[in-house]
Amino acid sequence: MEQREVPGRYAWRVSDSLQPLPASERHPADYRDEIEHAEVVRTLSGLPEQHPARVAYAAGAREAADSISLTHRVADRCDLVGALIEANLAAYRRTLAMQGGYFRP
Image 1 (tube, rainbow, N blue to C red):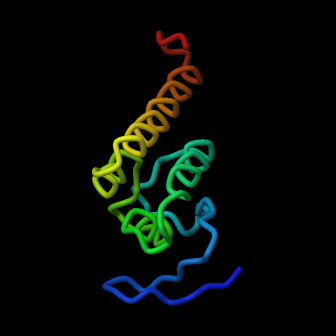
Image 2: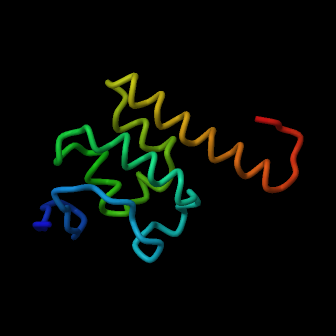
């Protein structure tokens, strides 16, 4: 897997294949679980490598610390916006189910 430096206001590396970020590289405000991270990667993997949403996610930037924030970077793609919102809602349902909430899937 080849990595290269991405110019800009952040110093980060982007690889040719997008992978879920390890917990140590995520933004402190990133509360997503591993399943949601996998869904986000699956959703963003269809974008060009230098798309702002992919770059922000790979950098662990604050702008990509949650799936809803990422929807702003793919606003022109309704299918991706829907997929990111669904990933967020699925994670919320899992959280409620673990807490014994009233929501039943």
